[in-house]
Amino acid sequence: MPTSQLQSSLRRLLPLTGLVALIIFFTFKARATDGTQSFLTLDNFFNIARQQSVILLIAFGMTLVIISGGIDLSVGSVSAFCGVTAALLMMSPEKGGMGLSVPVAMAAGVAVGALWGVVNALLVTMLRLPPFIATLGTMGIARGLTNILSHGGTVDATANGIEVLGNNDWLKLPLPLWIIIASGLVCYLILNKSVMGRTIFAVGGNPQAARFAGIDQRKTLFFVYTLCSALTGLAAMIELSQSQSGQPGGGMNYELSTIAAVVIGGGSLLGGVGTISGTLIGAMVIAVLRNGSNLLGVDPFLQQVIVGILIIAAVGFDQWQKKA
Image (tube, rainbow, N blue to C red; front, top):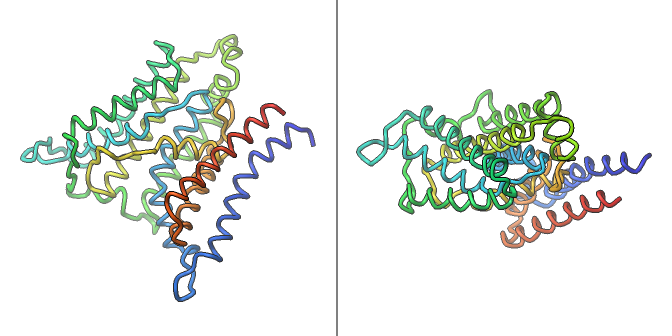
């Protein structure tokens, strides 16, 4: 087998192998006090899906950004901004809000998220700022504006029907799981079945060659950053529905979790490499690791150490592949 094919196979198989190994390990180790299964149950799977839906949605958008050769550090702050904005829009006028209906307020929250993506794209394409610096700046701006809007406090969002999106089921499956399936499918089709997908890989893999080929890199970057932030807004609406409050301190470390999901799933921070299925597996590796560790009573700080080691190992493996 040629070296390139071997490396590609390893990139695909290692995350999946790790996920299967974790599931097997926790299936045997994480048991209730009476000896019954506590990990490999349908209720626990739905619990993982609900908990991980927010990270997965943002990670799907982050996948496209990273494949294009960029990065978005603002997703956590943008998530908090979108949640607080939607909560203020649906809050009754007596309490200082606008009294909009839940669907309208949530649609506005997603639109606000998309606007942050446009801002990021403008900074990267028009001002030619490095994506790391541009999104680091908007991360601080979005977090600051969120605290200004909320006056540093939690914004109540107990409007009628707000719980539907994040907590209800449809056809016996949680609605967040359906949203993950639909969003993942759309992102998969964009990357693998569209002209835009080919340009995303081209821009991230070899920007100079893409420029010589006549690819409009600005259009491509506008698309990926806007989509990533729009999915961040949608994720924020799920979180808002589950907590029924806008949290100015919400979204902490979301950027790290989503980047970790992409990298562990085989994506390359150098651009040009990544898959939606890989990101899904990478996110599930982190989710299963944390869920199983919680069932076993593992220290949360130790869990952070383990995830950090996984990220370093994944990036190190990617660097080894590039050198090979």
